Length: 292
Image (cartoon, rainbow, N blue to C red; front, side):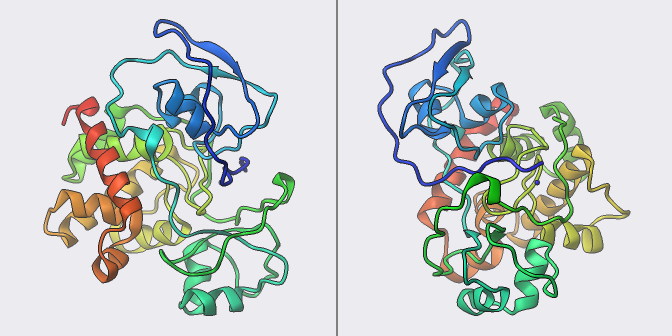
């Protein structure tokens, strides 16, 4: 996850600025704005806005800084990445937290929380560590943590300053029997095709894979070891995971998309959550951009 600042809970404010549809423009961030609010007000996706500024899709924008608003393509469907919900189950370690207490509150064994996040349970848990926890775990809100204290666990897959194309994603998807448009739509929704994106829920790369998912795919689904520093292998791992979800759901595309975001176990136990419904609609709306 090169660590990027993370998007906090910031209320959206009205913007008096909209760029022309034919060219990019510059905008100075004002108090209360986020990538989401700026993208929404200017008819571009969060991923497009983030990519134009070399940021992760969940980066925090700082008041007074200037960012580039890319030209609106006019092809962004309603419900595109600009309205994507935040990552589920994200948690930042606060003073007084231990891995044991977090695991107990989340209802999982300590080893499962450690494995999911790629951390060593024998090592001290640093304040500011970004964790993914089960969807719906009632841990309360994370207290604000200064940007310089945010810690991303050192685990595979690793973020790299690479991007991939939709054509490359479609080719990998075809090799594994996954619709190329589905894989590309999820990759765009998750990262804007950038391998340097790390989410507030500890997911990494083009396909936004958790360390635990990466390890499982390598051990159970891949025919050979995948390179944790490769954007292309991040795509391969994500596609293999998608292929397994399609099989597990009986090729129910909506349920597969929901499971990619929320987790198959959670979907089966509690159903599709409202935030997940938004994610599913976003991905389905993006698919026509990529040929399906």
